[in-house]
Length: 187
Image (cartoon, rainbow, N blue to C red; front, side, top):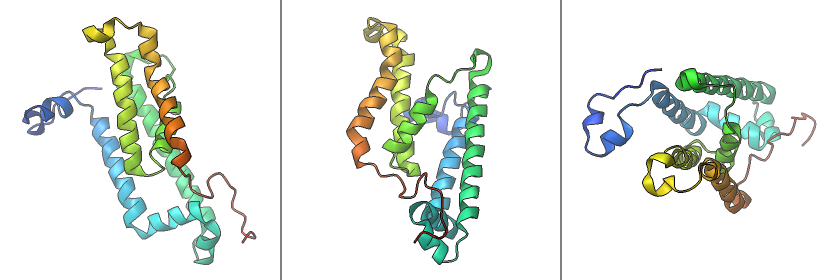
């Protein structure tokens, strides 16, 4: 996939070179999907129903929401987004992809927990984990980091992830009905 500069924005001093030069279109697509999902979940009636089906499905059912349909929509959407993420990995890694995603699924679950199951929190968590991965990847180009053995720096994002999860996971709360099959008779 081709990297491009964003016209106008890439000319901004300091910030332009950092964020708007040599970027993949899929980066901006993923940010657009994240912002759309935040809007959908927190500013629409559909999002309220969807969140209710994850927190209190019996209450949503008593309000007339078809819990089974909402959960199927959520599972199909998450599967489609996971497939899109896999396609993005294949396209951006281009010829270098060897069939391994190097634990990115683990980092994604950690970002979900650290981000408190909220889209903007997940964005902050993925930015943090991305920064840790970037430090590991550019370590050989930075003279002060080049003296640290490469294997330690390659483990760095995962160690940081474990430390962050240990520190913040006790404050994180998943949706109350997460992983529970919906029983219409249970009240």
